Length: 410
Image 1: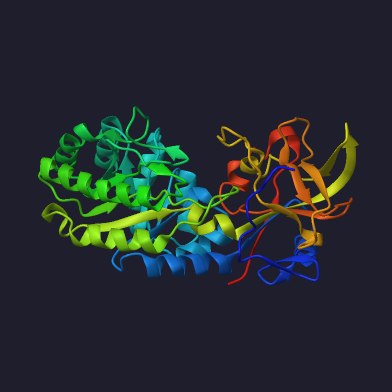
Image 2 (image 1 turned 90 degrees about the horizontal axis):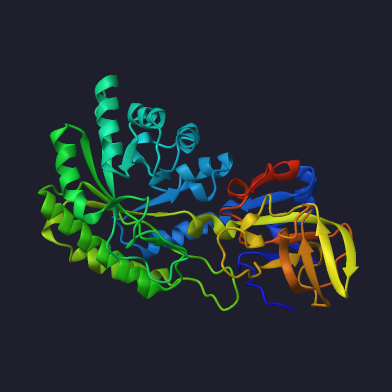
């Protein structure tokens, strides 16, 4: 049997059945109509945000990076919880605005913004995080044409990376942001063109579980912002320090000590250089806020043996939960935590490989995992499914269609 990660502590069972937001999975599936199904517990999100708010410096703004999960009911709830929303397309921007987000508290990052996206953001009053000098020039021209000065921040490609991060975004040649050495000239150009100068966006990595690496990176980010402000001769109104907070998917991974991170950041901001004396700071988190709130439910539709190995074939698969299959950038495939939701808490009886319904050997949700016996009709729960699940998976692959989604709790 191969190991898997731990089930989130917020999720428990009763009488052999998994509870989500205090409700039995069979009742939830009946309400939704069928499986496959993503279930999100808003109560878990609220508790995580409250813990984060208590740990971080009081003046620090906390933003939601909605790429992690743009499900409209969840997004609408998030707009009333966080201080701002960070988007990565005009589609996300429109979803956020329709969910109640305030344009002045939104930023739009990502390379390759089309002219129509830039125009939509300028017209709405959303801050554009410029990824290149060329993008800034297009924003100037579009702003002139529609008679609205663009709100522009500069996304910086820093001279360092977030050590131990699952996806490194700085300290190397990249399509993201502008190399630090070229930033001061662009800041002056923004001011000369009469645009609204909004500051810096400095993002160096994601899915980090080492608090010391995050502390070191945040301190380096503040120092870099100060240096760039001094070289440009313009203090930034706002600095987005990025995010990068990881969650423990796999065996031997432990949750981040956000208290340590928050205390260190408070000290860093208290001692920040004079060039940043009047600057507001923010961090943007997606996965850390919503990753643990989601459970993906799929029903066993066949149980079979092949060369002595047991396979549980479900009606779900990687077309909904790509990350759990290991096909979302994982170098070595490891098992997400999963369980037989209709025999929750029962003793391990066998090693079984949980697969989806797709006609590809890549469609594996759990490889040789230790489970209680599951039969046709039982429900498999894949945990840590609140981030980069439904919207980050190829739901059109082989024509099976998307999974249902439902938000529970308050």
